[in-house]
Image (tube, rainbow, N blue to C red; front, top):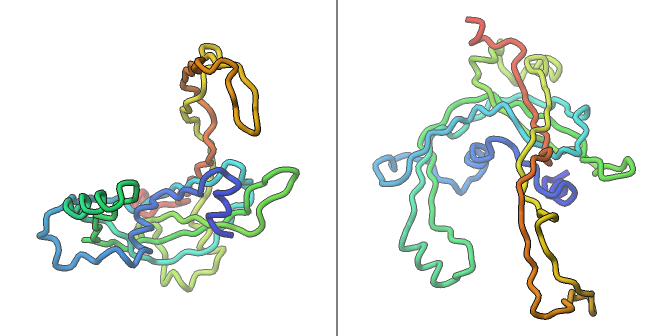
Length: 231
């Protein structure tokens, strides 16, 4: 199942923590940094070792399952250069379009262990769920996991035993209409359009902040025994 399918039913795509790091690893259009360190630009030191992910809150957490563990390389330092003139030129040619006038270069990479998990599609009502499974990944320093031997030779249950998974649903602030202090003009639908009885009437809409459960579950993946912590 694709992330796009999740977006249709969950209201937004699955947001995997550390998305920038993942993009820098997977996107071949992002340049390698050899020979470009001296150029002007914004330097960003990244923390690629992300142990959390977000999945739609309508997913059943009991369907989360470990899939695989592998060694990867992640960006740890990047440089972003903005071509000001190119931005101006693109804005002049296409004022409402998206400007692609920044170039991100990877300057440094680090090795990491990528733990990938899958989960069933969200339940969308009446016990039905989106068919298939989607995935998310979290990243650890190889030395803190302490794998004895090549990662590729580990069986799935052996690799899974290094980690423990927990989930929680955080509370978030959301702007909603304050119905008590808002005023709406009377009217009716005519040919599918809302028409006010008094053409001069103007809606007076007030908003308020409300704390509500997040539309996403946070998945926390921890090491059962950290080799760094034990030293």
